[in-house]
Length: 327
Ligand code: NAD
Ligand code: LMR
Image 1 (spheres, rainbow, N blue to C red):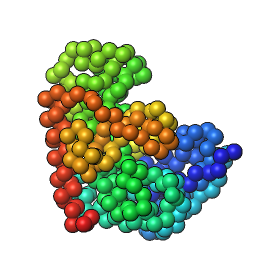
Image 2 (cartoon, protein in one colour):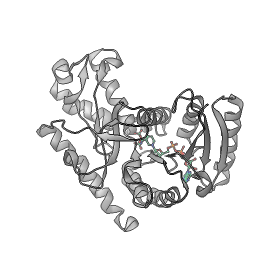
Image 3 (cartoon, rainbow, N blue to C red):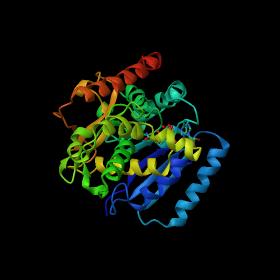
C-alpha cells in the first residue's frame, strides 16, 4: 500500500469544493491505489466553518477506502502543513455583470498570504494548482512569494477551457468527443484565451481541413469557448462548479501521468510570444509525476499571433495592476 498523499484544498466548503472532494477521495485524481489525506481549508467565517463540518461528515459517510484522514481548519499553516498538493480554489467568485479585473486586488491578497505559508510549511515535493480567479495572475502572485519551491511547481488551470473547446469541435463535426485531439489553450483563463484550432486533429486529420469553415473557427468557436464561463453564470446565476471540479481532476491527473499532453498555465519564459514571468496557458507534456516540459514548435499564423498578443497583453496588464502587491 502506498503512503497517503496530503492534499490541501482551499475553499473546501464552496461549490467547486463540494463537487471535487468526493472525487479526490474516490481515487479519480491520484489513482485507485493512492490513499489520500484531505486537508480542508476554509475562510475564518462561522458559516463556512459550519458548512465544512457538514462536508467532512458526508466524506465520512461515503466510507471511501482511500481516504485516510480529514483535517478541517481555517489556519493556513495547519491546512498546508506537509501538503504534497495544494489546490487553491478559495476565492471570491465573479458574480453576474462583474469583470474579472474587479477581483484582482481582493483575491490577490489571499494568494500572497497562501503563497508564503505554502512555501514555509508544505512538503518538499509540493505542487500547487490554482483555480480561484483570476487564476493565472493569482498563480503568479502565489509563486512570487515562494523562495523554497521553484516557480514551475505553480500551475493554473486552463483545462476547463480545453475541455470546452474539445466538446465544441466534436459537436460542430458530429464526431465522438474522443476523435478530437490536440486542442490546446494559450494565454489567460478569460475571454481573451486562444484555443489553437489550427493544430487540433479530428480523427487524425487537421481540424480546419475537416471543418472547412475558417470564419466559424476564428469567430463563433473562439467566442463560445472564451465566453463560456460568463454564459454559465448568466444561465445558472452562479459560476461553473461541477465542470470546474472535473477539469481540476483532469489537470492534476494529467500532471501525475507521464506522457500526458495537455494545456496548463505555466510560468512563461518567452515561448510563443508571451512575456517572461506571466503565467500563460500552453501545451505541456508530463515527464515524471508532477513535472512537465512545455511543448514548443507549434507554428502560429498571423491570426494566432494576433490572438496570443491580445491575451498576453491582458496578462501583462493584470501583472501591472498587482505590481505593488508583489514587489
Ligand atoms: P464559492 O464562493 O462557492 O466557494 C469559495 C469558497 O472559498 C467559499 O467557501 C469561501 O468561504 C472560501 N474562501 C474564501 N476565502 C478563502 C481563504 N482565504 N481561504 C480559504 N477559503 C476561502 O466559489 P466557487 O464557485 O467554488 O469558485 C471558487 C473560485 O474558482 C472562484 O474564484 C471562481 O471564479 C473560480 N473558478 C475558476 C475556474 C477556472 O477554470 N479556473 C472555473 C470556475 C470557477
Ligand atoms: C469559468 O470559466 O466558468 C469560471 O472561470 C467562471 C468565470 O468567472 O468566468
